[in-house]
Length: 146
Image (cartoon, rainbow, N blue to C red; front, side, top):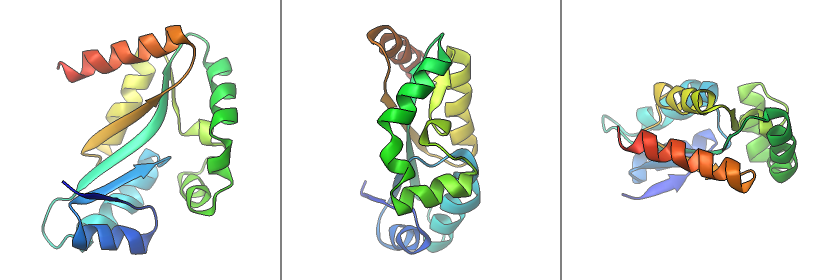
């Protein structure tokens, strides 16, 4: 499959017409369901395009510290116009607000929300301490064996 990275309407239309789908980064569930999915599906003219969405993820017992790390690590996306537009569309101020951070149940619920919003696949950028990364990968393994 060939997917085209797309955030804005014109690129999503192009992805729907010419590619097998799209891949996004820093796009939350409201934006996915209200913007990304409708535009690409309309442009796909009856085909069901792939919608791969990617987000930072951290299974942790210390969400406040993980949020600070995410805020620092992903701050650039709050400044780049195309990503800022997606964060604004989602109604969040900081890229850390899009990240899936918290307990296994919280992160799993966030992943499921992305599928409910129309994602056909979810990619995760795992971050945090080595223990948090291990816990996040453990969750990923448990979800991929279902």
